[in-house]
Length: 226
Image (cartoon, rainbow, N blue to C red; front, side):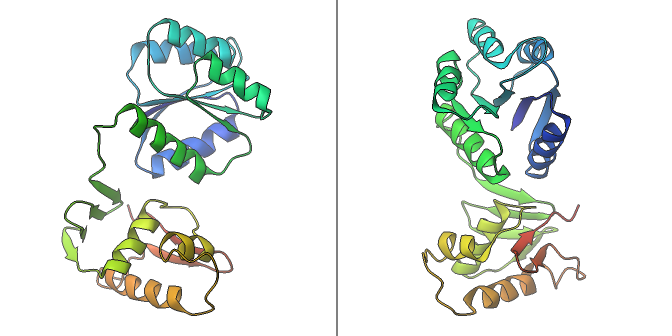
């Protein structure tokens, strides 16, 4: 996706841009409302992310101007103003979603994906790519460096869960709920066994160039290899 981020906070912008790029998206960044307005008029974006408190042109005024130009691109507001009344103002100004700061990147990414699906229902995801690892969701085939990797159904589901959250730490609780649909800890080593099997298939045959990492005390992370 091509995403426009309009955010004046350098640290916040760097964090979001890095995460979006690592997730395979193209990002343009504007540091004030006027620059954001100019970019929104000259380029076509799949999603626009706007901070509420911007220099030169505040977020709500910017959204209204964008909508006045008949630009229907989905808009998501990021703001430290998280009260209900503030969210209502943002949505009434023309935004499609509102996420209060501080936020988790995984939630931001999920909200972006929902906005795109909502506005482009005919667009269906057919594959996921993380570095040299490609998963075809239609044929349920997985390749790394062009070599097919045979996976059991649970291994496929585990890998898909990790690929959708690439470069993020995924906790054991997240895996139990998202892959095994357990809402309790069964006190078994089922996760360790499947992670080990998955690692033996996607890492070991490829000169030991690891993609699947164990984050001690936290969980696991699938990281790009390019």
